[in-house]
Amino acid sequence: MSVRSWLLSCATAADSNTPPQSSSFSISDTSVNSSSSSSTPTSDTSCSTLQSNLSLQSQPSIPSLQTLPTVNNTGNVAVSQLHLASFKLPISHLAVHGPHLYVATAHEINVYDRSTYSHVASINARDSSSGAVKGIAFLNAQILTSHQDGKIRVWNLTNNQFKKVNTLPTVNDRLRRFILPKNYVNVRRHKKVLWIQHADAVTGLAVNRNSFYSVSWDRSLKIWQGSDHRCVESVKAAHEDAINAVAVSAAGIVYTGSADRRIRVWSKPAAEKRHILITTLEKHKSAVNALALNDDGSLLFSGACDRSVLVWEREDGANHMAVIGALRGHKNAILCLIYVSALLLSGSADRTVRIWRRVGDGSFNCLSVLEGHRKPVKSLVVVSDGLLNGVVSVCSGSLDGELKAWKLSFSNLNGILN
Image (tube, rainbow, N blue to C red):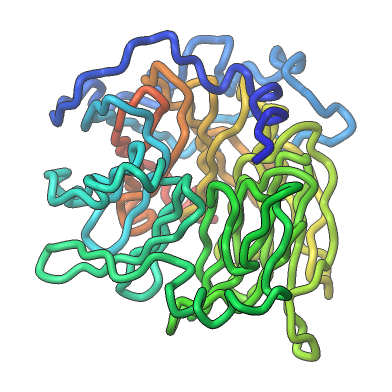
């Protein structure tokens, strides 16, 4: 695994000087119904001081898509913040499925009721050998978790009990292939593994229909069959360095982001038996950490250690994207991105979350900056079902183990959606 380049370029993304917090679960309202102006931080990070933050631009050759917010286009955001829990270890991933919120800390996943935030259960609490949980995804009723040990685990939920039903690659899949030498690939000078195995941490999962995709620090992209959990395809050297993120559109276009500063686009045309490389997107100046797609797959957002969120738009008749601009304002590396109901949220090593909205002319407004975390924001997830009645609920997790919930209320709902 090659993470040295990521650690060097994101040196500010993991400040571990603060001692770990004691494990607890509590709810306390720290900021109720504050106005949009009061939810905006001090002037050095304020959206309204965009012009004074030009020194933060790491890629001056890429035009900025930001416009200064006005009274008519801010959406009048009111922010309520809840402190939900403190864990002893960093929060590595957040996910929501059905009635549950999943919070990954080290090898364990704590499950909460998404409406009451009460603790329901723990997953993988006894298997510390699996290493840290890197990703969580959902395939129909099953839960997929990716781990530091290079494996993917499959869980079922029955009567509020979580049971592990598979560890991938499965024993049957291994037995089918272990005899033939052609099924092995070199991962180090003196080490070979089956091509169906990841040789390092599985850093991301994405699901599309009855297939799912995994990426790893071993630089590979693998495609799995959902029905029997078999690995059906592997791209051994999808990138030149560790892969940190994966996203897939409804049309089956796969995007991978890497520490090699590139985003690669993969597709499986009807005439092909395997996924092929469509194009390579090269605009970031440092490791790509996060990817997000809008609802119809026409926009791709990428966040990197260069402090910028790049916006890519699908070209007419093409399967790939072209960069149309950058969203700037974060002071440190972008670590996570989510898109929901015309809103883009970005979490950063600068300990803030920014809320962006695209307006009619294609530019973006920064509607609010959420402050309160004391360490880098590693993961974000939308807890509510979209932007319902002008309200969206979001959870954020940081590297000091703090879990926070944010209730964002927009008084100008039509302005947000249009």
